[in-house]
Every structure is written in structure tokens, then in C-alpha cells.
Image (cartoon, rainbow, N blue to C red; front, side, top):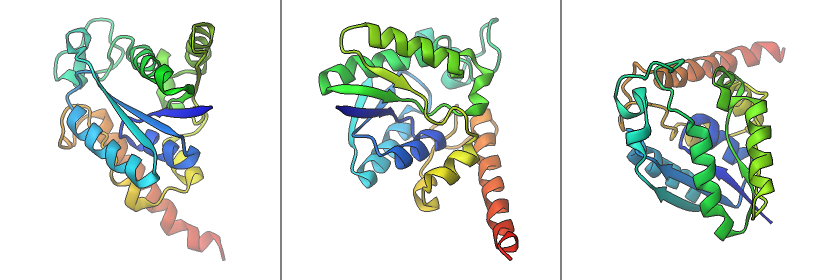
Length: 205
């Protein structure tokens, strides 16, 4: 029985990895602009947590769209970072690797705000898990933090700030561009955490 995580190197997946302590972490370079840093930082986190780290490299950039490949979005895009069927792709690739590793559960770090996209909803994860469990290998797909915000997940996980700061959230580059939705989320999350830290002492009196 092996539990795995799709470790992207972002705040959500790092916090989830610290919280749930899976046996296996899988990071995928699927042709996204920030792949190099996502792999490097995920490897650092996995080593720190003592998790076996596996990397999949397969260039799907010709199928991508928007910020993640530094290109214009296609007409169907609900946002600039949207990549058609991305979570479905990543989960399938992770399970294709995971089946040879004895993986029985794959966790994905989707949070409440990801519900903006269909593949970040409870309905999606129920359907994709049913499909993966139906097939050989019977790998269950879960989203343990889908009911939490990123700030709530970080607090619940108890992850130390020193480890969280390895997170790379930029959609456009291996260095933070500071103007994409991912960078904005990173900055806003740290601001909320710092504000919460400042308020906590007063609340304890």
C-alpha cells in the first residue's frame, strides 16, 4: 500500500506533502515554462521530507495554452493560465508511472479556489478517481485539501515557513515574474499568513 502525491512545487502541493507524509512524490515536466524550477524545488522538499521522488518528462507543450507556455490563450480559456484537460493529463501520467511503483492512492493538492476550473472541483476528482479505480491497478485519486483555502491548508499542515518558502508558484518562468496569477496568489498568501501571525498574540490574551 503506497500513497503518492502529485508534487508540483507550489504552495498547495508542498503543504499537502508535509501534512500527509506520502511515500512517493511525482513531479511532471509536461512542457510548462516553469518546469525546471518546479522539479528542482520539489526535489528539495521531497528530500527534506524523506519521500521517494520520481520525475516524468514528456513534452506536451504543443497541446498547451496561455501563461504556462508563454503563449496566447485559446478561445475556450476561462483564464490566462488555463491548459486544456491539464489535471486529467497529469493524473493519468502520474498513475501510469505509479502503477509500477505499487501506488494505491494519488493525492492532488487542489484547494477551494481551484474550483474556478472544472478540473479543480469535487465532481472532477470523484469522476477521475472512479475511472482510475476501474482500470488495472485500481489507483484511487484523492484531493484531501479541496475544502480548504491555501492559507487554511498551510495552517492545518503545520508546515514550517522555511520549507514553504521553497514553493515556486510562477506560471510563466523559472524565476518569479511577479505579474501572473500564480505569483499574485503566492504574494497574497504570504501577506495573509503574516497578518494572521501578527494578530495571533492579541487573540491569545
